[in-house]
Image (cartoon, rainbow, N blue to C red; front, side, top):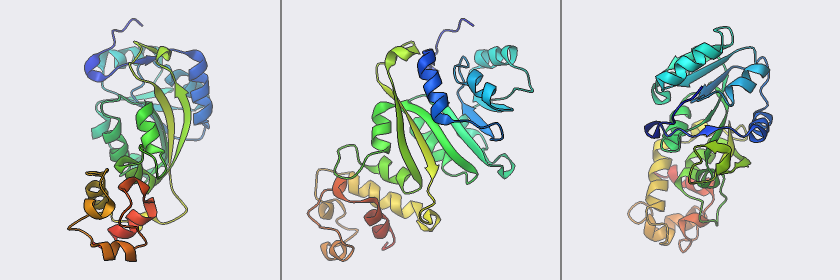
Length: 252
């Protein structure tokens, strides 16, 4: 299919077959698993996924691409949901699902936070801007470590899987891409964390990330409270572990 990529949809189509094979290997789809692909585009991942699965569901906004998919695959192979992934109900009758996709970079972060609301999602594997993947997977004492890191890592085990260079796409984006895997954590009960309170603490802390944590959180916690929580008030926000931010959120 000849399709002109649409800038408003953030379309960059994957075309490097070697990279595609590596991505499918990273995803490791099993026939009995339920998969939803966000933004299938010209089926670069869709086709090899269908070859591994008994059935695949996709969400696509672009009507021209929906028509292409309808002409290319049978209803037995593919269920197509035309619409916006940010408005789609991923509950799917509470059946366990895995979500994959080459996400438009302009909406990748909102989509990940939206998907985090659905308890039936067992795993997500996404292609994102490399800079975003580095922030998601960052460790403390690193400039990439920040609000996005904490608000995803408190809930997910985040793994940096693979680099994808610009020349793997048409048109080639101006940034490098990478593959990330997000799997709900099982090492502690993150449902006990109040996400609203944690978001409030972390947002305030990283709003002035070059200041000390005591200055950043002034008005919310005193230096004495920080010390009691095991936090050196002179540290910067990027030096403080996730667990300490969770502890602070429980003091509000």
